[in-house]
Image 1 (cartoon, rainbow, N blue to C red):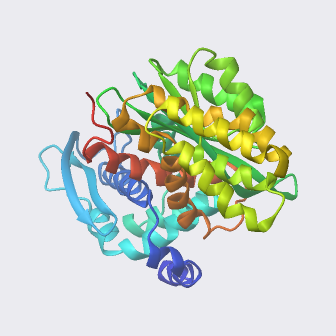
Image 2 (tube, one colour):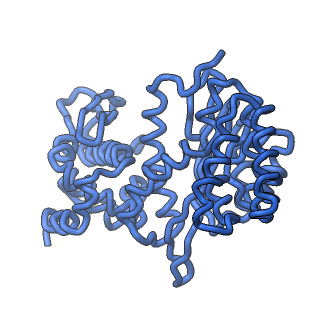
Image 3 (cartoon, rainbow, N blue to C red):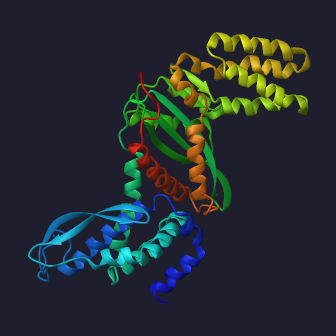
Amino acid sequence: MDYQEKYNGFCDAMELINTQGLDGIGHALQILINQAMVIEREKYLQAKPYERSEERTGQANGFKAKTVQTRVGALKLDVPQVRDSNFYPTSLEKGLRSERALRVTIGEMYLQGISTRKVSAVIEEMCGFDVTSVQVSRAAAALDKEFDQWRNRPLGEYQYFICDARYESVRQGGCVVDCAVLIAIGVTPSGKREILGTSVSLSEAEVHWRDFFQSLQARGMHGLKLIVSDDHPGMKAARRAVFPSVPWQRCQFHLQQNAQGYVPKKEMKKKVAASIRSIFHAPNRVEADRLLQNSVAYYEKEAPKLSAWMEENIPEGLTIFDFPEGHQKRLRTSNMVERLNKAIKKRTRVATIFPNEASCLRLVTGVIMEISDEWITEKVYLKTE
């Protein structure tokens, strides 16, 4: 079976990726084309970088930057140069011509975990000749290195910190388990939002959230004035351990959902929801506290459990009143992360079940890297005073 037949098979199997797109593919395609061009120059020179060889036919002469527009975005390529030669890598042209097949194949690499067999097929298609296992391993490592560097890049000062988790099905020890994908977003003092990082763990247990928070601190995150999240026990315990002095805003959307579990009658649900909304939409904290006390007293006889729950839990969603009015609407819930999670789900649902945690982390990282790049160029998320 030739390479084109292999790619046609991938196209049939992964048509959903091809039609919907797969955020993060651009980074992978860029890395693999760059690697293929380097391998082709080595073949042309008959020598590896800095290798002394009697068979060497010339000298490498650095790289020339080239930006190419493709359907997966702009690719920033480093075209290898050869001194005193008209050498030009054919793998560049082949890679761009085979973009559709390569996108689908790389999509499968993401979903199933990077395998040397799939990397080899991609590079050999672009180079037009066999590549060694060392060269393939180097290209595969370059893909993961790109993501590792992004996940471990230095951080700075952030006023607001929003975090949440979603779950993905992952094979673990012969079984399929739901692994937690932890995600954190920060808002800088200038009002720009930024995806700070992600992690995949077996659960939302306190130890996993704590490790994630501490890793963000180790990368330089500081200056927090407010944390926004839901009330998951593991996250709550980790937040108290790592950020004990930072105020916490419990997500008002989740509070509304939680409250419905304490409503004794179905016909009361809309009325209770309206009561809680009036508290959250109060013009100031004083009025919010007054409305809360009225609701607690009103439901004390008709729904005593709801009344007790509101008195204990609703105040955790009112911290936002202590912050600038122009910031309150966007920081009273963790919806910013929820929307990001929906974008991730659009891509991960193609996989259904990931073969391992590394495969899940690889795809999620590719998606949020692309979104993070878009956020860098957008206008400020919160206007600063």
